[in-house]
Length: 362
Image (cartoon, rainbow, N blue to C red; front, side, top):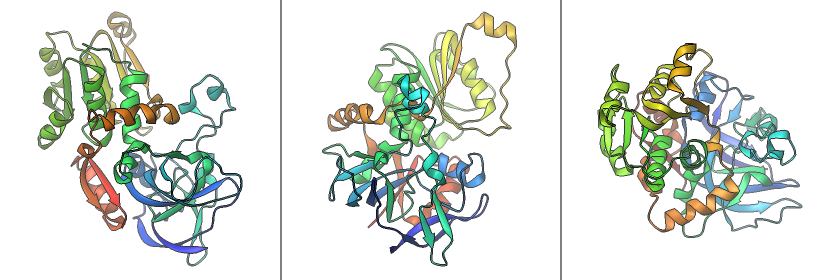
């Protein structure tokens, strides 16, 4: 048992506490990882405010990469000194979705969140927020929660592969299946939205419209691949149709998780268009359609979990794009912070500021 610093959520709706926790050594089938970096994702905010429910108190953080410190009995695919990317949603390989090859829908993916991960100095049991507890100097995870980090990619950058990049990439290439020459609109220019814009550019989209409430994000969006930028308003769908010859885009990807944004994304697509919803909204976010418009427009609306990705298969593909300079991980990051900076990063998310905040460990 050793003492390390971590960001702890004591209860839903409570402020994060940066404190020392007692982390055990890895047991059979477990891996201990020293974190190089961890991204601050909107899902962490959703866990803290109760939009997503996990056992608490918990160590948050699910997007990270680092170096293996030690391994437990039976672990053979990684060894001490190896660089790894954390996988917060490992597939069991046995449930019905896994048997269909839909590993992103694994029924047992989040069962590890109920485990006792560590303890505070006064003995309070802590859970790993989304299996991997990446908001900490070190973590102990199940062996299937680590994947070898791609060669030639700095570990601080590789942290982003654990959620934002796989989600944005998968939304474009697996869920929406954007084809070369198609038009795309991306709603929300945060970390996932920036990854989605880059993925759409790599897919060969002709017109790529970025939509956000903040005018200040235009430069970020255009650097990621947006050819057009729209500041969100009541006329957003109409504005997008004007940019696409009056038709609407072939594909809209919603990265916000709000009912009004989902509805606007759907309205922004052409007849027969496709809308993929990546954003995680609360139960109060009700989206409504009437039967006649569903028939008339012939559009499709699909949810998207973790980019409908298979991390083991997708990471090598992404690594090639990164090494070739086609995908720029650094372009997603707008600030590098310490653990103490996470609450302010949450505030920036709520205010719609910036892209990805990255916790960098010394």
